[in-house]
Length: 80
Image 1 (cartoon, rainbow, N blue to C red):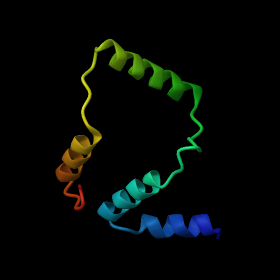
Image 2 (spheres, rainbow, N blue to C red; image 1 turned 180 degrees about the vertical axis):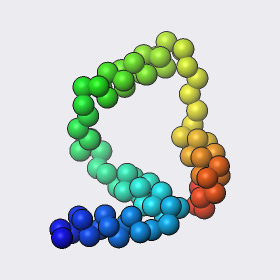
Image 3 (tube, rainbow, N blue to C red; image 1 turned 60 degrees about the vertical axis):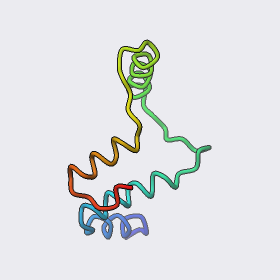
Image 4 (spheres, helix red, strand yellow; image 1 turned 90 degrees about the vertical axis):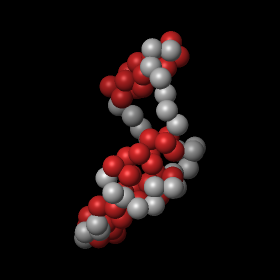
């Protein structure tokens, strides 16, 4: 079993709130100069949503507010 598979297996055994915290920590640790490779479909979707924001067709919210609301909704500690 590879190191990746071992880590993935161990992470899958964590309680949901710990897995969510782990996802958040891992995402936060990604270097800015190494963005993920996105498919053409995702790039089109990003463009569509960006255009909606730029045109004022949608109202945005602060990420901190969204994250806190979702964590509270699902009973996850550490929303801040």
